[in-house]
Image 1 (cartoon, helix red, strand yellow):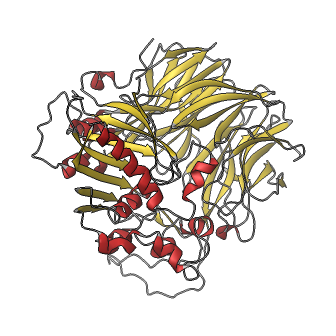
Image 2 (image 1 turned 30 degrees about the vertical axis):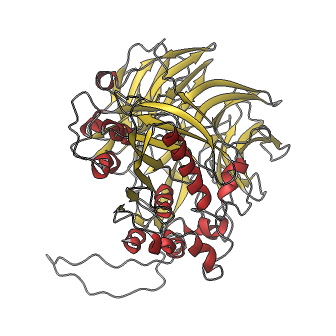
Image 3 (image 1 turned 45 degrees about the vertical axis):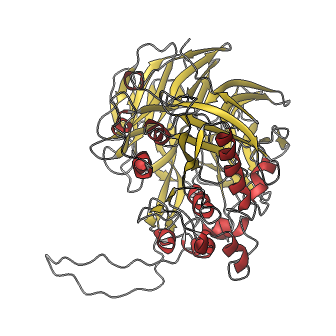
Length: 638
């Protein structure tokens, strides 16, 4: 076991932010103006989705913040040069602007905005500042992609269809009458989505629209979803995408193939292997396709590997067979190498791989795009020997950094006007062995401002969601609020977390939550108590989603914690998988069969089974419209 400070890189709103006030074990603390407050959450900004123009000098990026008047996230598009100069807003206001994409010659910028209604596609001419609305579509556009000749833009859009199994004759509504909404027919297997509720029957298709304006045209057909990253062939004749076009696709949680569709709507299948082939990227010379490959083993987690294959589907090669973590966001560097993103031990990085398999790290320390909690995150762009990444620290959300010739330069300081004048907590790393089997666990703890190492502090254990996700030493508004209220905040990447290899991620297969992840958490707390950092009589626990499951399960196994805040949990796996939007995949990959066939497996993992043991005062929180962890789960525990 060892503990060390996490060094902070230097220059060369939510419900979660209220938790410190809910969990206070002592009289209310008067927070000074120099401490991070709940209102400060609305002043934070972060950079995401940088896009470098073809000249290698101009960068567009999305700048996100929280609107205190609407309690919603706002996104604007900003511009700057590769040396950080000429930093200015391009598109800002009360509407949201996102997905900036440069035309191949760098003279125009396509983007999405809800200025009109939904998410519409716009193009801006950079020399004149004129903007054209390219679409006026009923449903939102997504995944926009320029053709290499700059003449056409491809995008995804949902197309609704009539799935009513029978017609019902209803009387005409009298003029001026105020009737209840009509009832909804549900006939689809996948009929709901968290954040959207009951879905109108629709399938996602590939569309194209002239870049100078015109009528969008649908290319793909059939009762299948073609929502995917889109990639053009160099001749601007075909668009590649990933989709599951099997007849029983709705019951398959881990299956997709690569396809190409030409401008006449003719479809060509490229891969047909079991598993998921996703995110195709055609090489500049049109010979190869880079894509991600995940097998279809009935397991809760599988690594995603980077492959290349000929455009005709021949000569498949795995470029990341020796990397025991999932790769993402690959893009070509010429015709003989690719950039990609990977996360190792809670830290995201950009690396480069040649077609012969040689790997080189380009940038590390990415993160800061998850304001609430310190999840791993990051985005990047690469062009003309320049790589631009989003990167934060334990005390700052994401800014832009440029890497050229192995030299890194910070381009933005989005939060210095606020955070430079705040006392913030500091993150320290802790490595320890789990008491249940000796498995090594990496974690961190955040100490309050003006931390006194001679004093023991009340401790909050904050457990991440997933469980196949990861925290890292990144900025967290929620945890900084807790630290400002006088707490030490402990967070870790328990077994089941990603970025530690496939074996580690699968240590919770068929046993989440259980005494295993519980031991991972308690062992870390014990170390902090032994070090005199945590007060054993003032221990608290919280977590959301999968973290809420673990928090609820934990208070059924121990009475050590004085209070718990359980957010959006699953407490009964039987009801969860049969009512939530994610149930199909969890039945297939997380449990050994259907609930009525293996009721004991589901019940053993359910915190509800431990209710007779629970004595800890507990706050339960779930949104009424939650479709991932339905409110009925919280109601059962309540």
